[in-house]
Length: 101
Image 1 (tube, rainbow, N blue to C red):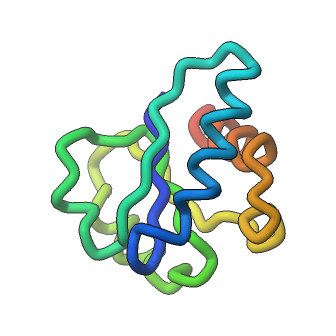
Image 2: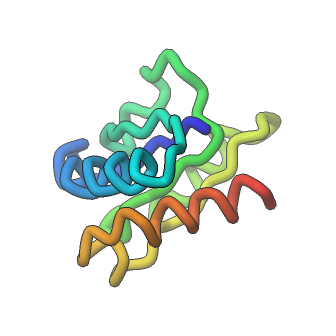
């Protein structure tokens, strides 16, 4: 699964990305997880399966849903507590549930 995290400047999610990568690795899952700022999603070469938006840019949900319309990409805002606690395991679980639909 390919999981893209979006935030304001592409930097605040770096700790969350690392926590998610560690959790996925411990579970034996080979996921591609990376981050960018919400305004640069259109510059990404790889189409993600799931896009998770940082709570601080939750207002971008409608724009990103519109951008990925017609694709299989699922888009959602991350839980602010899980995000704030850098709970990689919980966020990976959320992404998996979203992906399964």
